[in-house]
Image 1 (spheres, chains in turn cyan, orange):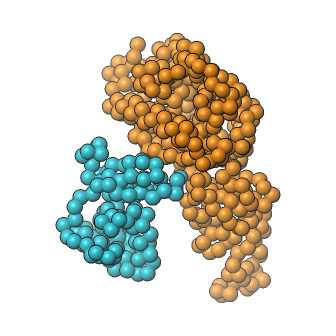
Image 2 (cartoon, rainbow over the protein chains, first blue to last red):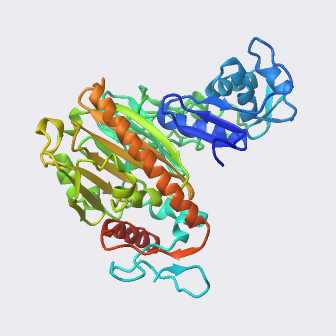
Image 3 (cartoon, chains in turn purple, cyan):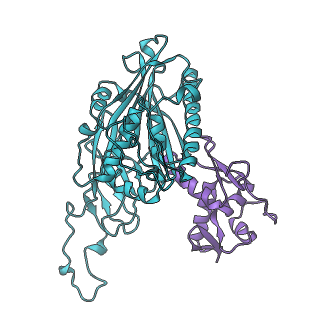
Length: 115
Length: 380
C-alpha cells in the first residue's frame, strides 16, 4: 500500500517519518513505537471524511458518539479529532482522562465506547 | 547456482567458504515469523546490544528506557555515578514501573517506584520501602503481625541486566551468563573507539524511521557497497571505492571509504583520511564520518520479521548545529532513504517465496560474516 491509495496517512512532523495504514489503529501503534524512542507526536495527514459534523469545541465523547461503530477504534477517534488540530497523542491523553473519569470504557483493546 | 524454491534445489546452512554456492543465509530466515521469535532469545537475548549514550544521563537519577524485543529495561545512573540497567518490572507482582522514556528526553527520579502498590527501589536496584500493608497482616484474620517477616532489601530488589561500555556507549546483555564479554564481541572496534574522544560529543539529532523489511536485510545492505555506484550517486561523489577496503573481524566489520581529496584533520574525529563505517553484530553501527567532525550511530531494531525501526543518532561537539552540519545530516538522511527503497524492494522479492537461497559475491565478505553469525546464533 502506498501513500496514494492508503485511507489513513499520518506523520511525525519532527522526523518527517510517514506511515500509511488501512486500519486506523495501525497509526496508533506507530505513534506508540515512535513516541517511545523519540518523544515525538504524530499528526494526521489523511483520513476518510466523517458523515456527521463534530462540535466546534473539542469534545472526545462527541467524537465517539458520532462514529458509527461501537466500540470504535481508537485510531478512528483520533483521525476524527484531528479536525480540531489534535495529534494522536492529544487524543490518547483525552481518551485516557475520560476513561478514568468514567465517561468512556474499553470493551476491546484499543476500542472505546460511551458508558 | 542460485537455489530457487522450485522443489528441486537443496538449501544448506551458510558455508564458511565464501566461494561455495551456499554462502548466503536461506531466504526463510528473513521472512519466517518463527525465526524472529527464535532471534529474540538466540540473538537479542545472548549478544551485547547497544542501549544508549551515557552523555544523555549525566546526573544521578537520570534515566531512559530501552526496549529490545519483548524486554524493556530502565537504564539509569545511580548515586555513585554508575550506569545500570534493570528490567522495568516490579519485584512485587511484575508490573511495568516507569513509562516509555526516550534517551532524547530522559527522566530523573530519586528512586524507582512502581505506581501499582508503591514498592520503591534505590537507584542500585535494592528494595528501599514498601507500604505498611506489606509489613503487617491487619486484613488477614489467619495471620498475626508477628507472622509477617520483613522483606530483605537485597533479596527483593530489581532484576539487573549486565551492562558494559565502549567509552560513553552503553551495552546490555540479557543472558544470565553471557557467552562473550563485550571486549570479545567488539574486539578491535572497542580499542579503536576508545582511542577517540567520543564522550566530548553530544547528541544533536535523532531520526527514527520504520522500514518494511527484515532487520537483517538492512544490516546486509549497510555492510556492502557494491550497490553504491548505481544507487548512491550523490554520496559516492568524492569517494574512491576502488581504494576502499572492507575489513572483517569476528563480530565486527568496517567499511573504510577513501576520499579522493584530502580533508582537513579538523573535519574528522579520527586521524585516518577516510570514512569508517563500523558494524557490530547483531544490530548496531558507528558511523565515523570522513567529512564532518562528528559521528553517528544506527540501531537496527526489529519490530517483527518484516519491519524494523532505524534509530539514527548524530553526535557533534556542539548540538547547536552549523549550516554545514545540518546539510551533512540532510545528505545522510538522503542516503538512508535511498537504502530504504533498495531494502524494501529486496524484501518484497524475498517474501514472494521464489528464492530459496541467494548467493554472495566475493566482495560481499562482510555480508558473508553477517550471515555466518546469524547461522551460528541459530545453531547455538
